[in-house]
Image (cartoon, rainbow, N blue to C red):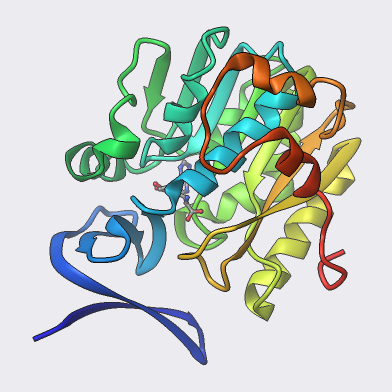
Length: 275
Ligand code: SAM
């Protein structure tokens, strides 16, 4: 008998991965949490039946959500990460020795526990001494923060269920206030391809543009996300996403499988149907 994980990506499109084993399944109170082991993508985590992270392609997402902002400003010391319970974002951030503190706010402790147990590739550094882990709603956490962070990374689920508040104007305004003058906000920005995703993507961009002086999107190819074409948002109070620092990123000596400074410049060039 063959076992297949099938995700309903739109009303008319399904995406399937042949699985070896269903390793974990439980409802956390916030969402349905599942972990599978597969032939092609290794182990992977889904929340409410939607793909979050696979061992095989997570490097693309985590390279792009971390190295793009880190390359634009060499003075990032204090970071707020919202969501990101699988740990991949924290793992990549910790590769920069000059970074001092990461506050990570994940609403669902079960995601962290399950990732630590089944996905050590992403989760193994979540309890590093530079990381302060809070199990709270990121929307509420950021309300009381003023002029505190150099970078905020919103590594969230889609804009429904627990992630809904992380796509609101209130949240983006609070992020603006929580950032220092040189601060940068980067977020998981949905896909431009299928209409339901595109609507969310454009609404998020509109809201961010009304608050931040600089608001752009950049793209990556992520095979296991709906359509494979995924966007990230880059917003700041002035620092441009392509600047003189980007080419010096090589000096950190980091080995990456996806990110490099040439790609950094290229990923902000969008297809005509997205602009
Ligand atoms: N790479 C992923 C993607 O784009 O599909 C995101 C992965 S990460 C697992 C997303 C995390 O955001 C989840 O663990 C979820 O529990 C968390 N999350 C959702 N809403 C949240 C909120 N309001 N505050 C903090 N964390 C939240």
